Image (cartoon, rainbow, N blue to C red; front, side):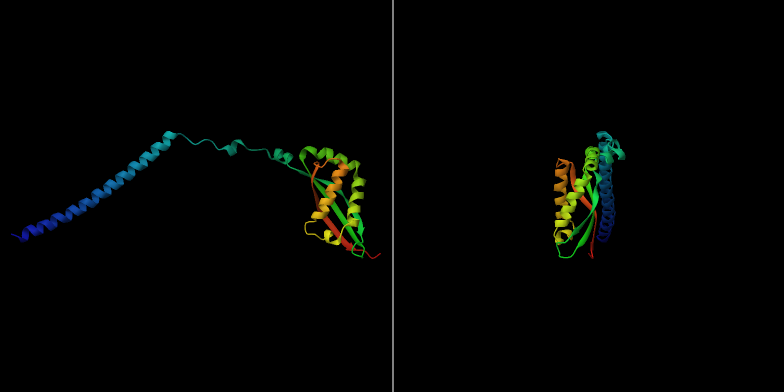
Length: 174
């Protein structure tokens, strides 16, 4: 008799542990399901997302180009530099970065004062140290030319920056 009750308790214990696992899984699954439904309902109640601002703020590319700075040709000139002892012919092309609002005004002033600009740039090139002619960024030449162009045009803020898109140097056999 004592053997039978022991067998019954083992058999009774096994199904109860399986039932506990199923109940635990059911409770955890139910909680997850409730959380999912709760988050979904909360998202639906808060409303729909606002429309994207990028779609409304599209700018016409032509307007964007008109607002940007414009590059204006200031001129070209040649000069002979003898600072190193040898005659070096320097050919230079100059441009200026100008705000879009001042393009017409600067272009008209450049046309009226083209020879004066060329004369001053040649003076700068003739008196430039060879190291300034060979700087990687040509900062010294750009600064000197901008100062002279500002004086010639009468205002410092018309030309925002002087650009030197081309500079060629060659030794002259004079």
